[in-house]
Length: 399
Image 1 (cartoon, rainbow, N blue to C red):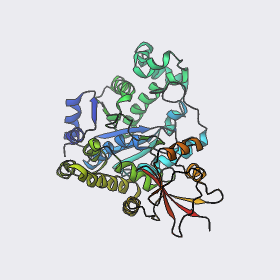
Image 2 (cartoon, rainbow, N blue to C red):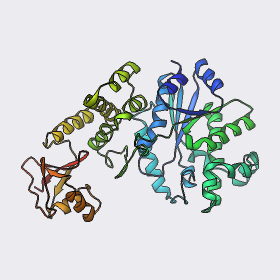
Image 3 (cartoon, one colour):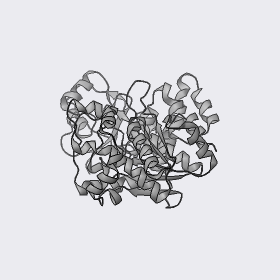
Image 4 (cartoon, rainbow, N blue to C red):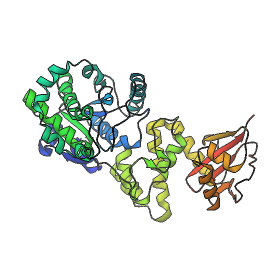
C-alpha cells in the first residue's frame, strides 16, 4: 500500500514539506510518524478525527505511529486560532484529561509499544533545565521569523504572552526528542499547525543533520461552511458521557448530502468502490449512504453493539416510537414542556424553548405541541420528545 497515495486519494493531505521525498520514504519502508494532541479539554472531539484517522491509515500501511499527549505543552497553551490566552489548567486536570485521551485514541490506533506508541511530552519537557534549553535549542530560532507566523500575527494586536511565544519551540523540541527516542521522521497535524511543524523539521535537521518531513491534513468545514465537528449545541465529543452514542450516530446521519462521499473516505475504512456506489445513490436514497456512514463511524468509536442500538433507535424515532437506546430524560418534578426541554438539554433556556414551540418544531410521540405550558405525560414505555428532525429524547416518569 502506497500510504502517501492513500492519504491523498482519501482527502487527508493539505501540505508536505518535501512531498516527493516524503512519498519515497513511505514507499521504501516503515517510517515512524507522530501527531500531538494537547489535553486542554476532558475529551477529544470529532475535529480531531482527521489526524487520528490519517495516523490509523499509516499504521494499516505498515508504518509505526506515535500518538503524543501534550501533558507538557498544554501547560503552555498553543496560541493557534485563539484570540486570547488559553485558560491555564491545573496539574490534576491535565492528568485526568490525558488519561481520557489515551483511552479514546486506543479505539482507533494499535498502541502496543511496537507498531504504535502512546507518549506524553511532560516526560521530557517538565525535566528541562531552562537556561540550558535556551542555550542549546533556543539559539536555533529567530524571533522575527516566529512573529511572522500566522498563529502569532493574529495575536499581536490583542497581546501575545511570553509563555505562548515558547509554544513553537516546545513543539519543535518534541519532534527532536521523538527522533532521538524512536527514530521518528515525520510529524503530522492540521494545516493550522504548519508553522509549528516546519519549525520542528528545521530543528531536527539543524541539530541532527538528518532528513525529516512535516505533513498537514485538511482542516475541514462542511458543505454549509460549518467547522467540522461543531453543531449549534457545540462540539461533538468522543466521550460517550458528553455525547451519547445515539447523538454521535445522529451527527453523522445528518451529514449534508454533498459531504457524504468525502466523510466516508475520511472517517471510515470502506474501500473506494463501496464509497463510489454509495455517494452515487439518487435522491432520497442517499439516506442509505448516510446510514452506512453513521453506522461505520459509531462502530469505530463505540463498538458494533452501540452502533446497532443507535440505528434501531433512529428508526424508532422516525416512526415516532421510543427506544431504550435513545438518550433518556427522567421527569422528577416539573413536567411542563418548557422545563423538560431545558432540563433534557433540548434548549439552552426557557426563552429558546418557547421560540422552538412557537416555530412548530416540537412534537411528543409525533403530535405537534403548540402550548409551551403543556404538562407532559409520557406513556409506560416512555415517550419521544422531538425538536425538529435532528434532536430527540425519550422521556420517562420517575419510578
